Image (cartoon, rainbow, N blue to C red; front, side):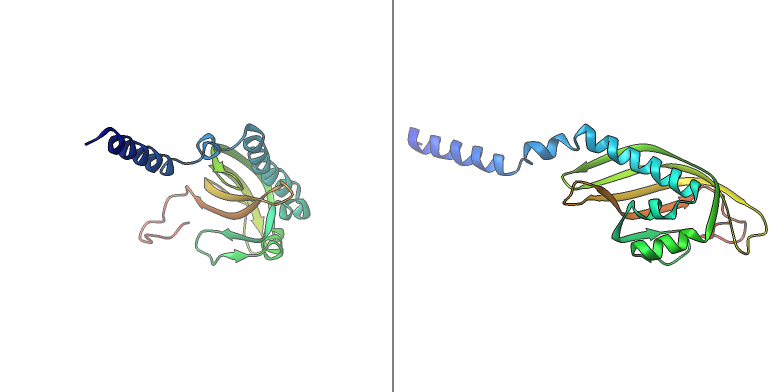
Length: 166
């Protein structure tokens, strides 16, 4: 193989390998200010729900947000989510953030929670702890909003009722 052919093959391989690499900004992930904002949103999620401030709580959600609760259909839309949560009285709520990842205008937060709540028809307050996964989108204005929130309980399954939570 002549020198020109070797250089052409080397150049082709170099260009091809560059096309397989993600851009530098994707490798870096989220800037620290976005990570801090996302962690702050999860704390505000708990604080506003505990305070009964459903307007502030709903303001954390995208207009087309989706809440996915266990053993229930998805609740779609900020207002429907607000109305659903407004029917519950939360007397204790803590959220911890275990992981924050994302790139550009899309991120997720994974963590754990502990909550005590009551609602109409409940004979007594219910306490539970569990885990969550929340997907957030950054709006054109730079604000992170909850796009999808999915959680489930750590309560053990009732005996003889596999797949159902207590």
